[in-house]
Amino acid sequence: MEEVPVEVKTDDYRVWFEPIDSTVFFQGFLRLDGMASYQPIMDLLVAAMAAAPVFTVDLRELAFLNSSGISMLSMFVVKVRQWEEAQLTLKGSNTILWQTKSLKNLQRLMPNLVLTFT
Image (cartoon, rainbow, N blue to C red; front, side, top):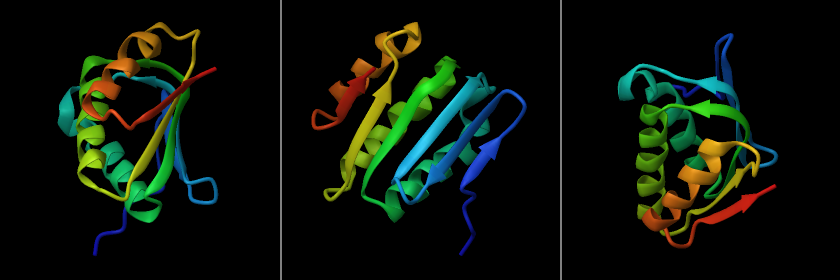
């Protein structure tokens, strides 16, 4: 079986999984080209969900996410919805415009998604 990384990072962003907290953290500016470029991050998210069906995605330090990234998050939420035992919490920031506009739409895809803003 292929090992999935617990961290994906460049100079612009960092995405990592903390198993102790059952949390995937996003930080920086994510503006990758197309869905294929987001696949390593999707793989990390799916691996985190498999490792800890009750988990959190913390986006509070992600200053920017382009439309391909928002599509990737939407596809991930749809995957989570298919796992009956999965419980997902998204943490967003009230001060980051893309988060206040886009994260609420994810609740339409998964009504039992817990969404918190700080």
